[in-house]
Length: 243
Image (tube, rainbow, N blue to C red):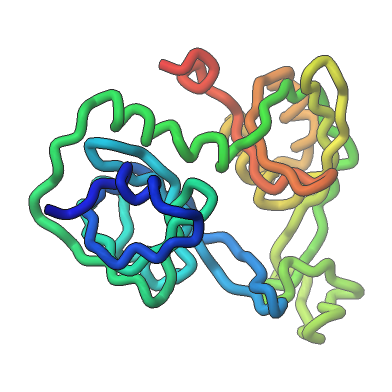
């Protein structure tokens, strides 16, 4: 009989689990970058998995497995690590697709479905204002990361643009109230795009800053790095009330 997830977590931290266990994937977060100890940049992603005994976060340090580890898939894991209360999957971990789903109680499924929510959006607050929203021409080369053009030329790759061949990017500031404190955060193009989608604003509007102000104040959930918001979403009634 194969061990359960709960059995695995009774072992010491850092233990390599060579036995096969069967789990169900509940949710998966997008790929994100991380740095190895030698400074090399790689991609990884996180998933929530469970069986009938336990739920846990799985850190997948092999980005190629993103095509296999998908929501609602039943998988057999072999040669993985237990670290800090989570599973670590590497390129040496065997991940098999399985056919028969394990019988899992509803309360376990519910716990697993909430497990990644805090990782995706660790912070919540009230979006009260927006300022200094600037639209600027940028390079379309992905390696340049929307670098601002100088006289229609990218200062990084040197590419020249006409008046209509470049793309546009954004930078701005948000005033967010959290725990009765007002905080100022910087946002960039991906966050502006998400706000426009959530608030129903036209990102091509010449009065975009005023258009967003007309929708405020709203509750938001977000992820930040220092004074920069890296991920943002306007909360719905489902988010706020937990239905």
